[in-house]
Image 1 (cartoon, rainbow over the protein chains, first blue to last red):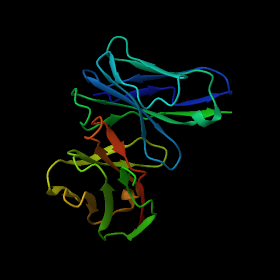
Image 2: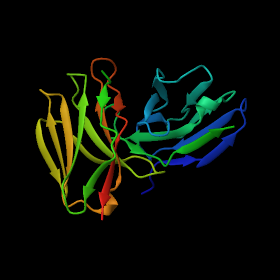
Image 3: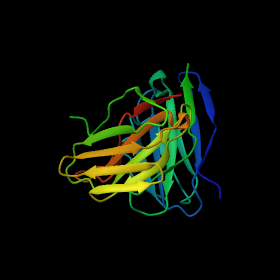
Length: 115
Length: 112
């Protein structure tokens, strides 16, 4: 079966541009997570959805970051007015249960470079 | 103290030897522990999870958990060059929000 799919694979944005990153989780997976991974670091939590409900957005670094999952499947992470410090790999992960401590299945990530 | 701590490495191990990767965590109430492998430029891949004290074996991999010492380790037997990767330890943070927190990872290099 298909795994977690993310697009685009790479994104180059000029500082100040808005970007939208897409995540298509494994079919039927209830939980969806977004993580940010800087070079040489572990993934840092951004936000968590259970179906269409965003239950935790405590990791979003600023109000320029916005995530949605309107129908409980595909999710979009939007970053407005991108800054150089936003350059990172953005990882999406899903899990079949509604428990946020279940094993995660990661997508291949979107590498964002802000110039 | 960081929530999940790992030695960043690199840890160099001869091919065929046992690689031992260690992780400590700060939340005494943590109940779920994971090891992910991440190849350069790729996404993390789950290789082991453990919930109870003791050892859990899966092929060449053994996860060891000691909750009293707040310590979890991963042993890789008969190390192969294909095991060269960064290994991420992840733990759920029970005392706040139950979310999974990752360490920075240990880079493992298997010497042919």
